[in-house]
Image (tube, rainbow, N blue to C red; front, side, top):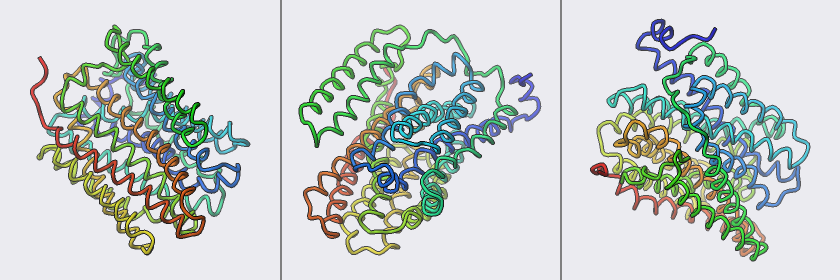
Length: 468
């Protein structure tokens, strides 16, 4: 018989909330690892399946699309099934995607399993912030989120390095199996730590399938429209028009739905609306660059997969050290100040890669990456807490899900945009090594510009009176 919340609190006392945090940390780390580790294998997958750059980016953007769409269902799943069953189901889905994906024999099977992993990751990723906002006091939230993010950032820090080593020595299939031990440990902890009567359970109405369908169609057609921009112009125009119209229809429907998938009143809170805008633009820059850097290291600079993955390891370790400090500062300083400063460092990092990459050494590139990850460390806790502070308790789960949704939507668009711009610049430049370097420099400048643009919205994440 699964333990109840009362039994677990009696057994662990005040430490129980930290045990819950550890449990959701491991599972979320597995989902983030699955999203980042594959990027270093893109050139290998392109050769194995004979993919062009515009199709290869679907290995990453397909995952991001699925994750983006499924995120909006997390609040309903928690109300309907509770934390224990929702979390267990998502981990089992992630495990299945990793194992079956490793045995892929063709592109449709590969992309299908990436979509399955993305669906699981989308359900998992809003949960930790919801738990922190509900289980920890306001004075502890920055510390808890800092500790949580410290663990989570180790995944993208170690992922490319481990992935590069595995791809180089064991082939691309091995990277899919990396999530297996994380999933097994998470399942074991879930059985022991998470209660059957979750405090997150409540009166779950019917899931807003119409809203989910509309936003799903909008997201998929928008991304497909971007991918077709360099091919069939008419097809791209039709897809982008359908995406825009269904997005408008989704917003209009959410305004009058009884149980909306996304509560539009969230955007009546200035901190939240500005935080959502920052999250979208920041997601474009961050995920676009995470896709771009390993490809750049291998295709333009001719490094091995392990060398391409290793370049992010010191930056990731620095990020892991900065996160707890940033979490502590979030409890003491206005979040808009920390977010804007972090975005400035992130933009500087990408600009330095663009302006100095042609003559830059391996260790110089590593330094630029470290500067960017320091900036990222200040953005993450402040953006999450700064956006949600001021929301009423019943809006927190929806707010966390929505912020994650817009960030991942920006990420999916960012990966596609980076792939398209890179393909365009490679075609426009000469075919020699110098031409390829300049094409990548142009794309890095695009990413730097996106991060700089987000600073404008970040300054407006100041506390404001709640709408009456």
